[in-house]
Image 1 (cartoon, rainbow over the protein chains, first blue to last red):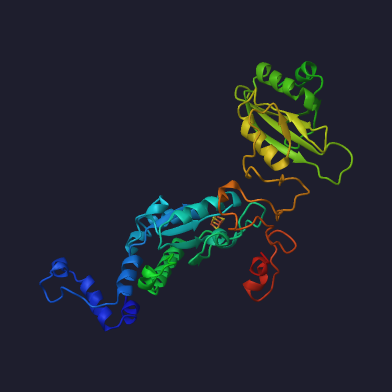
Image 2 (cartoon, rainbow over the protein chains, first blue to last red; image 1 turned 180 degrees about the horizontal axis):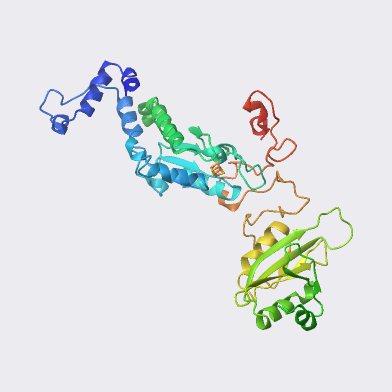
Length: 191
Length: 196
Ligand code: SF4
């Protein structure tokens, strides 16, 4: 939390305190002096996006079991506002590719990715999704980045749940640096 | 199980050595269907547990190259029995299908067809089961490299044919070989400098 605060300037800090205020009434009291805040639109959009990622579990092999552990109560992905796992690509914005991507499956992965609405991000979870892992063979795609763009790669075979949580936090960090407003109005936006 | 009784009922079966002590016989492929039928009806072998296809290798000039080993199990006798049938034709290996007798033969035969290229005559739907339909090779054959060969993409890439290519995986001399002792993982790992 300390590092988090350091990264913000004063206006952002005010904003943060406003949102973190323990009195919900205060937060919604339009008549009060904190009824409005100043911030950059980018920051607001990124703040919203980063804290409500809806992951899409593309569980293809053993790593998916660790992904389920992350969703469970012990590691609890809900602490980061990402507990809403959606199995429909239309309702999710972060595909977690966890497992071995075979050539036969790769086409389906690509199609599902294409169906996700922008903005969307991809996490390659584990050695297999990142580089083919130990399956250096005729049937395995050597890394899912051969078909779709990947934002975060996570090492491990399988990835520890903590590592995946770290990856998700790094993804949040990446989302916070995006120029969302510009891309909102740009013609060729995909993000 | 009476070995003598089996050999007198099916004289074409030749007893075969088995390291695990299982009852094993060599069976000529044209008699396979008959033998399996007799085993099922008269010797209570109700299930076909597995079909393991074999490739003796392309560099052995004499004898049959492809074949299949059938494992039958009897729930009443509580025992296994093994039949081994070698395909007579090396360039176009064929065996009779046991799907008419054992439903479990269906997927096992499709797998042997997919990965070893043995054609099972009489199979109702002999399609590939693991690799995609348009795949041109049979990857478990001895002369197929583990890294793979260039091949057309599966149909699931429909409309996305420029997405990637089916190319051999980088191997650097052997499976799982990364040169030891190099200081950096990037140097050791063949995939980091593969030309794909
Ligand atoms: S990286 Fe390891 S644990 Fe994960 S899918 Fe591949 S083989 Fe399984």
